[in-house]
Structure formats: C-alpha cells, structure tokens
Length: 356
Image (tube, rainbow, N blue to C red; front, top):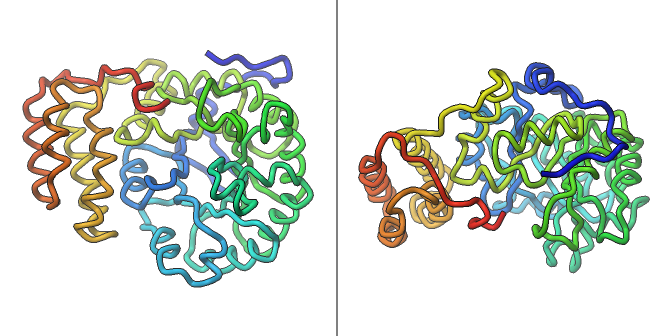
C-alpha cells in the first residue's frame, strides 16, 4: 500500500468525504468519480457508472482543435444525457487561444464543468503535438492555457495532470500552485509521471504533497482498484475525492462499493450475476442508442470482456461472444452465461491481469 509522507495534512475523515464533497461550486453525492478514459467513457459507460453511484463523470479526452473545427465526432463524443450530471468535458489544447475558443464552443452544450488535460502520456498527444503531459515542462504556458479557459466561460475549470514528466522533474506542487493562481477550481493528480506511463506503483505521497500545498480541492488518482483502496487513498493523502479509471471498466459496481464502505464502515456484497447481466445489457443498449448497432457491438466487446473477467467458465463464453454482431444476440448470450452462474459467483482473477 502507498503511504503519505510527512508533508500530508491530517487525514480527512472518510465519512466527512462521503457526506460533504465539494469541487468548486459543485456538490457531489460521492467522492468517487469516473476518470476520462480514451476509447471507453462514452455516454453509455458514464450513465451506468452514475447509476451505480459515481459522484461525477468525465467525457473522453477531446481535441480543442476538433471543437474549433466543428468536428462531428468531437461533438458526438461530448454529447451527454441529464442522467450523467454532474458531467465535465475534458479537452486537450496546446495554446491559450485554442483552449479559450474550444471552451466557449463546448460550454454551449451545457456541461457542468470543463477539464484541461495535462497528463496524457500518449506519444501522439504528449510528444507529437506538445499537449497533454508535455505541458508539464512549460508551466508558464500551461498556466496561460488555464487562465484563458477560465476567462472564456462561466463554468468551473479543472485540471488533470501527472506528477511530472519523469522522476527527475517532479513538479506537481509547482504546477498545482500555477493552475490554482490561474483560476482552476480543482486539480486531479495522477500519482505517476509521464515516463511511468501506467507501469509501477502510483506514489500517493505526491498527491499528499499537492493537497498540503494548495487551497483548491484535490482529486487523487492512481492504483484505486477496490473500495478499500479508495478509502485508504483519501485517508493517507486527505484528498477531497478519488478518481477511478480502469477498475470501473466492466465494473460500475465499484462506485456502489466505495459508497457503502464509506457510509457503513464495512464492505458490501459483490454484484450478483443478475446485476452484472443487467448492467452489461443496459450499457450495450445505451451504446446502440448513441453509436448505432454495428459500432456499438464492436466497441462493446472490450467492456464485455471486463464484465466477465475472473468469473467461472468465462473463456468459452468470450470466444463465442466475440463473434456476435447483433446486440440482441450479445444480450441473449450474456443472459445465458450469467444465468448459468451460482448466485454467489464473483470475479476471482487478480486485477493485474487487466493491466493494473
């Protein structure tokens, strides 16, 4: 388990976090929020996670330039339903004018907040375009992007960042000070550097150092795989909320589990096979509404694999389900599989098998 350093402020009561979650002007029903995940957090995933208790959800990372150019795909990805509120649109930008223009355009869609990405480690974003985590190497420019966005819209603007470009240039505290001074309403700290990508252990003490250094709310991110992980992260860093990403894929129940543990002091029972079927089928139906059947079924396969990961006799089911092309056929196959499981079936495979 990660441990906070002496820089951390006194640990926040987990119960306080459950009952009074404030991010700028927003008040959340839970301190557990869904991360923006490229290729995953479409409206269907966001809706199912909100249904199971996510306190807030974020769009996939969108291109500011795509918004400026009226790109149809960008707006399709930004679209949302009332059920998703509070909802934030995340975008990446490389200069202040571009960010401000995109913010004004996307604000017309009516989200509850906008989030600026200064953490994406992907080469196409962070190296080729100079966006994402690359901006951690130019704090003055990063701060100007935040300031321009804040001035452009009447919405809270937040920042998601890594803890530095690499282990030799850890500057999360300096960046957090800069974005707070530029008007950001809160900051999310992923406790890895860009060079770490998603490998190794997240260093939660870096989150604690940011929380101790700035007055704006801080969301902690990194290696939250279970409800107890979420509670420990809040307790050892005093962060205001916890962002859950890959652990929520095929597992929206993690938000219910976090909330139950916070409010009752004990872990909840795992989702039953019937609940897992209902969530998966509902998410697929919503995806069809957004994307049409062919694309929805194709894109849902990665979610489907996660819904059954670790469950008994899932290998044969996955082999057959991956061949299906109609949503009704996928749902029928899911129903048949989950109906065959005992009521107490729960995933048993280590999360590390999913790349955690």
